[in-house]
Every structure is written in C-alpha cells, then in structure tokens.
Amino acid sequence: MTRSRNTRRPTDRPRDTAPLGVIADDFTGATDVAVALRRAGLRTLLFFGAPDRTGQEEPEPDADRLPGHDALVVALKSRMAPPADAVASSLGALDWLRGQGAGQIYFKFCSTFDSTPRGNIGPVLDRLAEATGAGTVPLTPSSPEHLRTQYQGCLFVDDVLLGESHMRDHPVTPMTDSYLPRLLRAQTREKVALIGLGTVREGGAAVREALGAAGARGARYVLADGIDENDLRTLGRAALDSPLVAGAAGLAAGLAHAYAEERTGRTLGAGRDTADDEREAAGAPGPPDGPAAVLSGSCSHRTLEQLAVLADAGRPGYRLDPVATPHAVALAEAALAWYDTLPPNGDAPVIYSSAAPETLRETQRALGVERSAALLEEATGLIATGLVERGVRRLVAAGGETSGAVVAALGVTGAHVGAEAARGVPWIHPLGEHSLALLLKSGNFGDAGLLLDASASSASSVEPADRT
Image 1 (tube, helix red, strand yellow):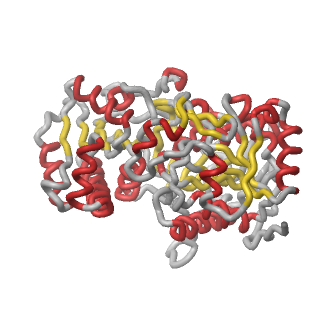
Image 2 (tube, rainbow, N blue to C red; image 1 turned 30 degrees about the vertical axis):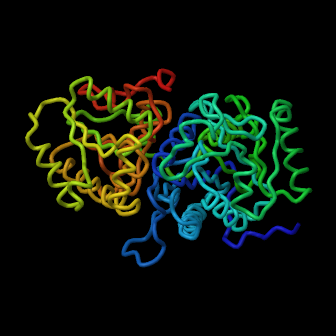
Image 3 (cartoon, one colour; image 1 turned 45 degrees about the vertical axis):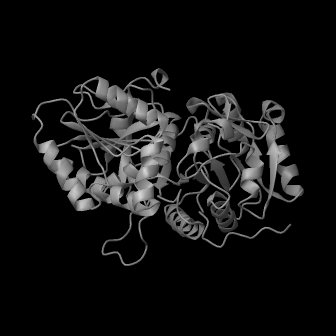
C-alpha cells in the first residue's frame, strides 16, 4: 500500500538537536506527558493551544527565542471535540511544532482511550500520519505508573478490563469494550495490527522487525503490549525512527528515555540556555507561597473521594448549582461573594460542580449536556479570574474541562513544568509569571489526599512514588 508523503515542511535538523513535538488532546493529559518528559531528562516547555500563524501583531515564538528545550508540548481541548474540529486543531499544532524545528511527533491521547466509535482518535491519527509521511505508527495507551496496562491487545485499568471498570459509566465517553484493535478499527479505515508482550520482551530489535512486518502486510497502526516501565522503554527505543508515535504518557516517557540515552554526553536540546534552565536543572520548582484555592468539575470516582477528604478536614466548600442558577455570570458572582466572606488567613476553600452520577444526570436532563457543560466552564473561568484578582497564588483545578476553562480564562499560553504534587500531576508556572502556579489534575489521578495536600498552607512537592 502506497503511503502519502509529508505535505508539510519537515525539519532539516538532525534528531539529536531537533526537539520532540507533542500534541496532547487535553490540558491535564498535556501536563502528565510534559512532566514525564522532564522526569526522563528532557527540558520541556508546555503551550496551551498552538499559536496562530495568521493575524498576529507580534511574530510567533521560534525555537531560537524560546527558553532552552528538548521537547515542546502543545495542549489542545480536542478530546471531546467532533472529529473535524479535532483534526483541524491537531494539524494546526503540527504546523506550529514543525515551525519550531520539531522532528518526531507524538500524539498523546488518554490512557483509558476515552473515545467512542464516533470519537476522534482514529481521524486525528489518519491525518497526522498522512501529514508526517508515517508508514507504520507504533502506539499504546499503556501507562503503568497510572495502573493502565495493555496485554493481548486489551486495556486494563487497575487490573480490571477497561470495559468492566468505572470507565464503563463515564458520562461522555462510556468505554464498554476493552479490546484496543477493535476500538481503533471502528474509527479508521486503515489496518490495525498488534505486537504481543512476548515480542516486546525480546527487545527493541524484535519490535522493530515486527513493526516492519506489520507495515509490509499493509497495517498503518500497530498497538503494542506493555505492562511495566521496561516494556515501554523497549518500545521507546524501537520507535525512535518513527515519524509519528502515539499513546499515553507511558510510551512518551519510554521515548524520552531513548532520546536521553542517545544524547548521553552532549548538551541536550534546542534554543538558548536561560536562568530558568539553571533553576530547573537545580530542581523542579514547587508552588509559591500565598493563598490557595481548589476548583473542581470532575465527576470521577477519585475526585469525589478527594473532595470528601477536603470536607472531612473541615475545608470550606461551595457547590455550583447550574440548575438553580442557570446563568454563568450570576453563578460566578455568587461563588466569589461567598469567597469574600471567608477569613483572609483561613484554610484554602474549594468551589466545585463535581457531583455523583445521579446528580449529574439530573443536571443534564434539566439543562442539556452541552448547555450545562458550557455554563459551568464559563462560570469556572470567571471564578478563576476572580480568585487570582483576589490574591490566590496556588490554584488547583480538578478535571480536564475545568483545567481548560481555568487556563483559557487566565490567558495562560505557555508554562514551565515544575515539581509534581502527585505522579503525573505537576505544578506549572506560566511563562513570565513568577507569582502564580497552577495544578491541573486529571480526574482520576492522585490519591485521596491530593487536593488536601496540594492546597495546604505549606504545600510543596511530594515524592512521586508516594502517589497513585
């Protein structure tokens, strides 16, 4: 089968100086993959949305003007978008990354493969593969540090098959099937192949041979089993020469380790060294001192547990009720008025729309799924802006859509990746802003005490191994 050639300008830089370019389909996933890259030794910059190449008053940033880096991560809000919209934003991100000299491209999707048969993972992969000239694309959602593993083509969550896990009841993307080749085939006309764990355990050469054999049989996408970090490092080494690689943060970390191994003994990356590079080399920065607050919109089981811990600890809480107040501005004004009644030096409060499944269904029945989501996102953005204007310096956001609303409302376009509050949940420090730190938490990440610990008056980073 003849593969399309790259229709976009490829980088002319050698791989040992070209940064890795990552396109992430949501904001919390972007922070997860960014910290995985940084942890593996790659200096990583995070951007929210690809800068628009048209209609700009100022020239877009280029690799020589950015702080020194080995990897660039572009965070999109495309996970729940219609396929056409997700494709358009992903190709825009690809254009920008290519403009910064990125060589290899990594498409980061969720470790629970959040996507129905009408989802956009397949369509985005199809267009990225065409644009990068990729013949076969290695991929896996396996991320053992988050207890997501792939075995015999099936995805497991906490040792439970995906289709039998809590993801079966996800309000937007219910995952009722666990077999990844079947899930992906429903979204693409391309052939999908599988590399089993036995082949992976034979090493990188065996995986590369299997990738070549799959491509010779006409397969474009090759899902690879992986159940531990060593498996993913093997896959990362095997994928070094692939123009396009895809998966969750686990494979990205394996790829980053392969980059670091290949570059041993030389200065890493692109751009020029800065004081920020020296600061990160000395140790990833934690959050600044100052008031903290939590904004939560995730309805995941883990986030609900974390909110219960906050309540048990006596933290002040305010619930956003869009049915009672179906107007974003009024909803935000009421929440901020409540915040203004709190003692100035008291415990960090939580403002939340998170709800148990039945309450969520009632809200969606009353307002409609799209209207209720849009209303809460707008209100959350207004609240985030109001909190920062009132002096909040550590803002914790729980949930992908909540995180997106916070970042957009605050006008954050790029960030340094700081210390982790939990595995895969780093503090981020907006570029040019030294008095504000954001913690963008995926709904299911962190142990039960994460929100309590991260918003404590003496919050600091924790050892990643201490977190789920």
